[in-house]
Length: 91
Image 1: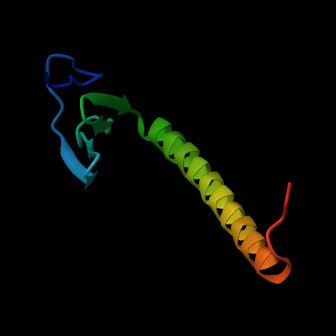
Image 2: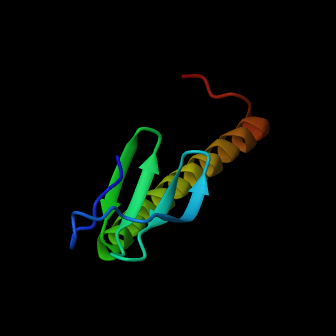
């Protein structure tokens, strides 16, 4: 079912894809500037400001995940080095 223009519900949005990947795509309606995020069976509509806020939030979450992964990798490397120097720790 095509989405409708917020300003003119009798007209369907014309979608222009601006990004896509294996998990979905992002399109925009040039007439009303609404962004459409489609993931498998889910489609969400955003104003440009709301999409920008969502993108920032997802970017922050990814940065935190990357930081945790780097911290865990550094801790694992330190444990391997410590074990190599002193033998395995007995608990």
